[in-house]
Length: 295
Length: 228
Image (cartoon, rainbow over all chains, first blue to last red; front, side, top):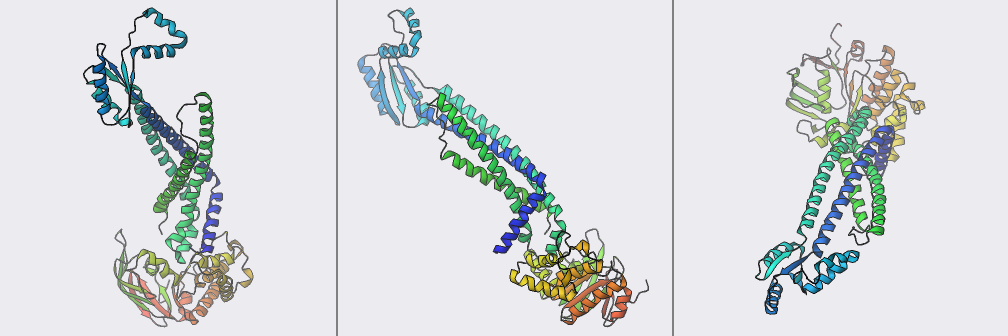
């Protein structure tokens, strides 16, 4: 496109945004709200994913042994476990050691154990970690069937719950996003329709003197993209400040919580949202141009 | 310039607007298209501009095959045609100069040419002094002269005028016809649809009369031929 034509397009675009001031505000606002909610769900879902992954990678299998095993039996079991694929570490925890740990964990309330007297109800155990989180389940099931093993447990319930919650968030996010995208498209295409209507005489003249279709379309397409972009900018500013505030808050109380680091994560989110905004804007005007601009 | 062979136009509602029409218009001709409202004059003009396609037949305008033309070629067809309407169709928020320059802007003509070309067509229509005025500050005749200036600023080979004097008093109409005569003598083909009996009778140019979609008369140096 020639430079003076681009000048003309840009001037026309901003003139039109000014002329439709209220529709412009409404469109930008709708885009901003939609993209903000989209961004929140995105951030939430990605953090949940990260949390699941980090929990899974920390998951270890506790292999509880039967009470009456000889040292040799124990050694055999250990060798068998080490011989399996995907096993990272195997550590023996004697029942005495386990009791000691339990006491420490109880802290001030360890007097509760006084009721047991000298008896130790805990079994000997191996603590097994795997190289890949998704092997936890199969490894645990296999080890649980070994002779001399009472049971092999891992935090499957917690992980299953997290999975379910993540899936729910994703589904809710997608549904809400689809609805919001629909609303946004509707309002942008309406704004562009008003612009087309306001300029229908001009468009008719442009056609008669031989303007090309794209020459006529560009200012409208640009207008939609600018609407989407402006909405995106507002959403991005909000998202950045909200997420930074959350990160500060969480780290000051729960330092170990596996939140995604602000940078470069927020930069990706920002880019994604700005691009989505412009795409939605362009799509909105395309819909309108298809329906109302017979060129 | 314009070759229409066996052209029919039947609208979707079944109305026959043109019925096997044959017209040949050569370069530099001045042609009146006459006929009652609804006779097919508007359809004829729409076909030339490719606002509508013929149902059958072949049509060449300015060397371009209008029937077989791709959509994206249409703007280039129209750049060779200058169009003038009964209701002027000027943009009210643009000045006289801007209204004319607009026609150059949208076909991405070089800017340095703009000033010169606009001034030269303003001279032709005699509105050089009024270049800063808005259409609302002009009389009907002056507005139509601006429309003519806009139609010829890109130097079209054919000027198509649809009832250009329909809203004007007789005296002003003659000013407009005078401008057309001058444009025509510079070599531009003029096709003008009109109801104005006096103008047609006085000008003694070629007259094509359309009635119910058919050509009923095609005379060099003809008259309006109807008493209405």
